[in-house]
Amino acid sequence: MTFWIVVVVVGASTIAFKASGPLLLGSRPLGPRVHSVVDLLAPVMLTALVVTQTFAGEQEIVVDARVPGVAAAAVAVWRGAPIIVAMVIAGVVTALIRAAGG
Image (cartoon, rainbow, N blue to C red):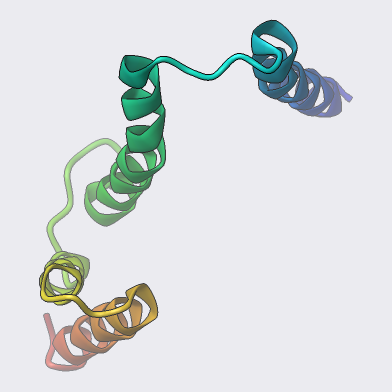
């Protein structure tokens, strides 16, 4: 039962937090400095998630076949590949390294 209370509280807090922006700002535009920070939030959060999922172990940093896969995907995106292509490249590189015994 405690688990569901936490889920409901976190969900309600998230909704309240998201609703507070439009309620507090109304129709006023964001300032240029705030707008530049907001533009960076999604890429930074995605990067943090990818790094955490790539290197996280139980209580230590893990370097395994995922690292070269993510590196290959990063190079693909840097070279202009669409995200879906980069994801496929990451999966293929990781699978090949694991198949080779890495």
